[in-house]
Image 1 (cartoon, one colour):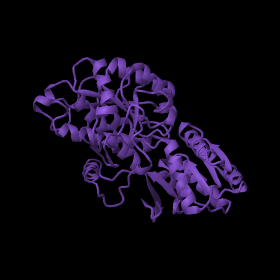
Image 2: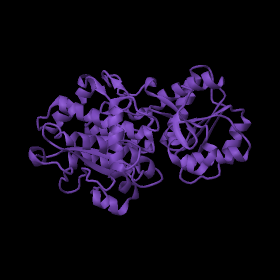
Image 3: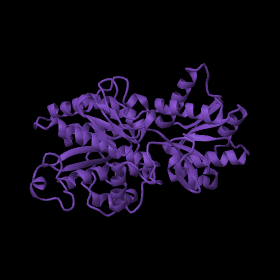
Image 4: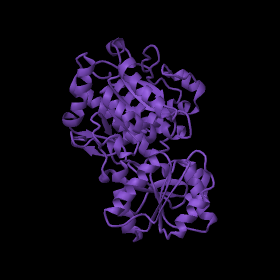
Length: 415
């Protein structure tokens, strides 16, 4: 794979060197920018003849999160396909400029600079890797273009005076509030051990759960970390949590690492409820933990193993399955990617474009904050997803508690 600040992916390049994009693109003709615009299959007429609207996408196509981040890309690509099938926005097709951060914060910063100054995107979406997103957020503020954070859970990537970042993601603070309420109601305990990977994703979750417990005069009985990419024997961390008297494990690793935690718990003969989020929702945890994953909980914003009742979700799932040949494997990432992208497109359409890049970016940001209006998404219906004071669209009412049952992640009877 070509590296450096000039790295831009064509679909063909990705198919050659990245297995996940082969899966993501399903062999189709998604709009992905390299040197020249590549229009969607079947797009023609006036829309195809106009300059495309460029939307940046910063994601992780290499590294231990690659197979997880594919769902974010796939959800966004379905949104792009749908909008282009209708002629684009104002007669202009939407085109993604997809860049791989390689889970490297320094590279992530360079990508944001390039989006703004070289590719001159109107807006961008991404934010899968929380450590990278934390590094990118202040640069987005400097470069002044709207960025939709579709997965990173770290509150500071959207909060803390970040006027250009918006979130259709599970903010760790909100997730911890939801999780604590769930644990108290269904397991009648606050003796919680937090086991987390040592990057931004896990640290954000640990800090958030500690914060919500402290608000009630409590604290986690144990907080243990691990290296998501390297650690396979979690016995020491798990044993300390067990010895501390934990009655629930709040688990925030990614994929296989969570499976190693399950193995360590089994080795120690320790069985208590496990509550997690996206890291517990993807199949990595089940593939390593196997039957040990049965009965573990994963907080999501969507579930595609059940019949969809929302019309937007029905259409999304049908289009996703037709394009990729399967349903999403990490439900929340796909749904949040789709809804986040569609909110950007709606804001662009409502704001209108003048051709002045700085003014258009500002207008899109302002429209997201005050003029987006109602949006019916895969996750839920919003009257106004954002305000000037709140850039997080997902709240506790957007959450679903899911559980692994017979090898499938389904909606739990406990909510």
